[in-house]
Length: 167
Image 1: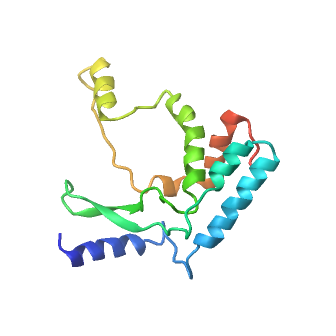
Image 2: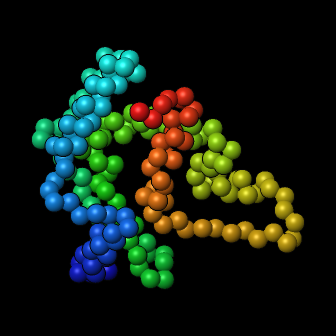
Image 3: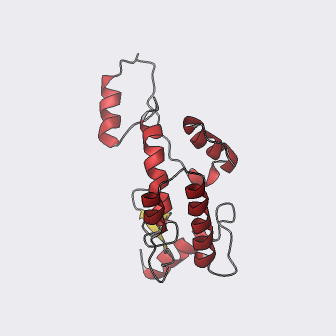
């Protein structure tokens, strides 16, 4: 894929108004302020201790704006890019709070009956199943899964194991 095709592929992703909306200005400082306020609120409510507050509050100076690029799926008949935002926003204003939330979500996700760790785990799972001859193995390719989860439903789902209110 040449440079112009790669740029066009990225532009198709950015122009997808179902998943991305254009911004008038960078939002890194505004996001940093919101994250700082959230950390303070969590600390005041005794949801996090002093050490966690300090760790969550550490950010790079200046803030790094996450970068957008696409990872081209070369195994598809038509080349298509999967959108990537930096490396999880490394050094961005949400990096630490994202890592913290991930530590809370991991125990919930791995405790689900539907949890499959990786490709090897999937193969082992399938090999152990006894199925009759009329069974069809089907796979799916999900597009924009996380952008299509209703936010309120996602918040409720995440909060319920911790018995937290959404406010």
